[in-house]
Amino acid sequence: MGVLGDSGVSRCKERAYVRQESGDPWQFSNPRRDGATVPYTDADTGDLIDEAVGSLITFRCPLGQGDPGVTLSCLVSLIDEATSRLHDTLVEARDQGYSWDEIAHRIARSSLSTRYRYAGGTLRRRNPGPGHD
Image (cartoon, rainbow, N blue to C red; front, side, top):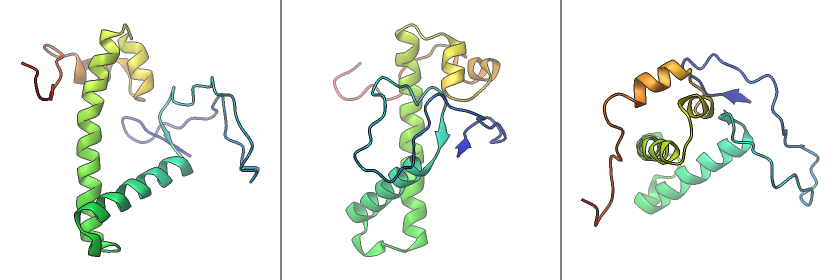
Protein backbone atom coordinates (compact mmCIF):
# COMPACT_ATOMS: atom_id res chain seq x y z
CA MET A 1 0.00 0.00 0.00
CA GLY A 2 1.58 3.28 -1.06
CA VAL A 3 1.21 6.64 0.63
CA LEU A 4 0.93 9.78 -1.43
CA GLY A 5 3.34 12.55 -0.57
CA ASP A 6 5.39 15.47 -1.83
CA SER A 7 8.04 13.22 -3.33
CA GLY A 8 6.26 9.90 -3.23
CA VAL A 9 8.87 8.71 -0.72
CA SER A 10 6.86 8.95 2.50
CA ARG A 11 5.38 5.70 3.73
CA CYS A 12 2.63 4.98 6.20
CA LYS A 13 3.90 2.36 8.66
CA GLU A 14 0.57 1.75 10.27
CA ARG A 15 -3.07 2.70 9.91
CA ALA A 16 -5.64 2.79 12.64
CA TYR A 17 -8.03 0.63 10.66
CA VAL A 18 -6.69 -1.99 8.30
CA ARG A 19 -9.16 -3.72 6.03
CA GLN A 20 -9.12 -7.40 6.77
CA GLU A 21 -8.76 -9.64 3.75
CA SER A 22 -10.74 -12.57 5.09
CA GLY A 23 -12.55 -13.32 1.86
CA ASP A 24 -15.85 -13.04 3.73
CA PRO A 25 -18.09 -10.65 1.74
CA TRP A 26 -20.37 -10.20 4.76
CA GLN A 27 -17.69 -9.05 7.18
CA PHE A 28 -18.22 -5.45 8.19
CA SER A 29 -15.88 -2.92 9.75
CA ASN A 30 -16.47 0.00 12.08
CA PRO A 31 -18.65 2.55 10.20
CA ARG A 32 -17.26 5.37 12.36
CA ARG A 33 -13.68 4.71 11.29
CA ASP A 34 -11.84 7.44 9.44
CA GLY A 35 -9.65 5.60 6.97
CA ALA A 36 -9.15 8.83 5.03
CA THR A 37 -7.03 10.72 7.56
CA VAL A 38 -3.95 10.00 5.44
CA PRO A 39 -4.12 9.45 1.68
CA TYR A 40 -2.83 6.08 0.51
CA THR A 41 -3.29 3.73 -2.40
CA ASP A 42 -4.56 0.19 -2.06
CA ALA A 43 -6.66 -2.33 -3.98
CA ASP A 44 -9.81 -0.23 -3.43
CA THR A 45 -8.13 2.82 -4.98
CA GLY A 46 -6.90 0.82 -7.95
CA ASP A 47 -10.29 -0.79 -8.50
CA LEU A 48 -12.02 2.58 -8.36
CA ILE A 49 -9.62 4.14 -10.88
CA ASP A 50 -9.98 1.12 -13.20
CA GLU A 51 -13.76 1.46 -13.04
CA ALA A 52 -13.66 5.24 -13.62
CA VAL A 53 -11.30 4.91 -16.60
CA GLY A 54 -13.37 2.08 -18.07
CA SER A 55 -16.58 4.07 -17.68
CA LEU A 56 -15.06 7.18 -19.23
CA ILE A 57 -13.76 5.16 -22.19
CA THR A 58 -17.22 3.65 -22.63
CA PHE A 59 -18.83 7.11 -22.63
CA ARG A 60 -16.28 8.76 -24.93
CA CYS A 61 -14.93 6.04 -27.20
CA PRO A 62 -16.67 2.68 -26.79
CA LEU A 63 -14.39 0.95 -29.30
CA GLY A 64 -11.30 2.28 -27.50
CA GLN A 65 -11.26 -0.34 -24.73
CA GLY A 66 -7.69 -1.66 -24.50
CA ASP A 67 -6.19 1.23 -26.49
CA PRO A 68 -3.44 2.82 -24.38
CA GLY A 69 -3.86 6.19 -26.11
CA VAL A 70 -7.53 6.35 -25.16
CA THR A 71 -6.65 5.21 -21.63
CA LEU A 72 -4.03 7.98 -21.34
CA SER A 73 -6.51 10.65 -22.41
CA CYS A 74 -9.10 9.41 -19.92
CA LEU A 75 -6.55 9.22 -17.07
CA VAL A 76 -5.46 12.81 -17.74
CA SER A 77 -9.11 13.91 -17.77
CA LEU A 78 -9.66 12.28 -14.38
CA ILE A 79 -6.45 13.79 -12.95
CA ASP A 80 -7.44 17.27 -14.14
CA GLU A 81 -10.93 16.94 -12.64
CA ALA A 82 -9.53 15.63 -9.35
CA THR A 83 -7.00 18.48 -9.18
CA SER A 84 -9.75 21.04 -9.66
CA ARG A 85 -11.89 19.40 -7.01
CA LEU A 86 -8.94 19.27 -4.61
CA HIS A 87 -8.63 23.04 -4.69
CA ASP A 88 -12.38 23.57 -4.22
CA THR A 89 -12.52 21.06 -1.36
CA LEU A 90 -9.52 22.70 0.29
CA VAL A 91 -11.41 26.01 0.22
CA GLU A 92 -14.40 24.30 1.84
CA ALA A 93 -12.17 22.74 4.51
CA ARG A 94 -10.71 26.13 5.39
CA ASP A 95 -14.24 27.63 5.46
CA GLN A 96 -15.28 24.90 7.91
CA GLY A 97 -12.40 25.54 10.28
CA TYR A 98 -9.72 23.04 9.28
CA SER A 99 -6.27 24.36 10.15
CA TRP A 100 -3.41 24.36 7.64
CA ASP A 101 -1.75 21.63 9.72
CA GLU A 102 -4.86 19.43 9.52
CA ILE A 103 -5.17 19.98 5.78
CA ALA A 104 -1.46 19.27 5.27
CA HIS A 105 -1.85 15.98 7.12
CA ARG A 106 -4.89 15.04 5.00
CA ILE A 107 -3.09 15.71 1.70
CA ALA A 108 0.21 14.13 2.84
CA ARG A 109 2.29 17.28 2.54
CA SER A 110 4.26 19.31 5.00
CA SER A 111 2.44 22.20 6.60
CA LEU A 112 4.91 24.64 5.06
CA SER A 113 4.50 23.33 1.51
CA THR A 114 0.71 23.28 1.89
CA ARG A 115 0.61 26.91 2.98
CA TYR A 116 3.07 27.90 0.26
CA ARG A 117 1.09 26.17 -2.46
CA TYR A 118 -2.48 27.00 -1.39
CA ALA A 119 -2.47 30.04 0.90
CA GLY A 120 -0.78 32.50 -1.43
CA GLY A 121 -3.01 35.47 -2.13
CA THR A 122 -6.71 34.97 -1.71
CA LEU A 123 -8.02 31.44 -1.66
CA ARG A 124 -11.13 31.38 -3.85
CA ARG A 125 -13.07 28.77 -5.69
CA ARG A 126 -11.72 28.28 -9.19
CA ASN A 127 -14.95 27.13 -10.85
CA PRO A 128 -17.95 28.43 -8.89
CA GLY A 129 -20.36 26.91 -11.40
CA PRO A 130 -23.37 28.34 -13.19
CA GLY A 131 -25.36 31.02 -11.45
CA HIS A 132 -22.47 32.28 -9.29
CA ASP A 133 -20.84 35.67 -9.78
